[in-house]
Length: 193
Ligand SMILES: NC(=O)c1ccc[n+]([C@@H]2O[C@H](COP(=O)([O-])OP(=O)(O)OC[C@H]3O[C@@H](n4cnc5c(N)ncnc54)[C@H](OP(=O)(O)O)[C@@H]3O)[C@@H](O)[C@H]2O)c1
Image 1 (cartoon, rainbow, N blue to C red):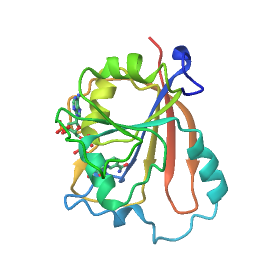
Image 2: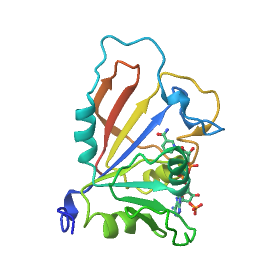
Image 3: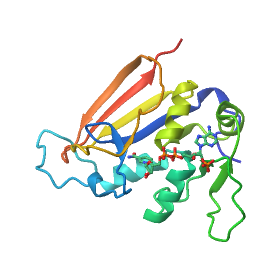
Image 4: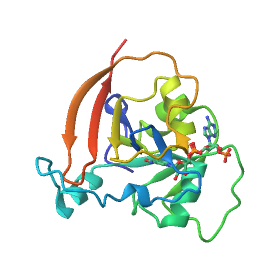
């Protein structure tokens, strides 16, 4: 049993993605070299140590991702460690010896996923893509915190984070952090209705 079991009220769903300056989160060929920053150091920016990153990641209780992001993560190298991962899909995934023990597949209503399946077990829930799943979560008002990391690059084409049919939504700016590598992180919280 997770230590957060029963703590349904305090769950936070944080959407986190990295976007190019022109709003793309993936290139057409799925290559990820654009996520590296060979540019000039931004001296006024901050840098974080590996220990700080590890402490930060340790506080994440669960990741939620769409099946295409899952498949891409398998190709690139698993970035989620031993943290539980829920993959949203409408497909049947036959049992496979290569499926990690920490991975669960979910089909169905997304509000039920958050309120019934995740909230009783996890407090700090991270939705990490892709574009399709993030848009559905935003449309349904299931995102509490929004962290958008902007990479210092224009891609020109690719997969748009906001290519769908979102309607106007206000968000409260919580924090802005500029990093030495030229990336900027914008953090917002949902405006409660
Ligand atoms: N830059 C970044 O931070 C970042 C982050 C994440 C991903 N990415 C990139 O984004 C790309 C993938 O994004 P994507 O938008 O194409 O796909 P995605 O959101 O990762 O996955 C889409 C799939 O998720 C499932 N899905 C989504 N909504 C669903 C719902 N309401 N009910 C049931 N299933 C649902 C469906 O799976 P089935 O088809 O199995 O039914 C759908 O085909 C990859 O290239 C990845 O590397 C970039």
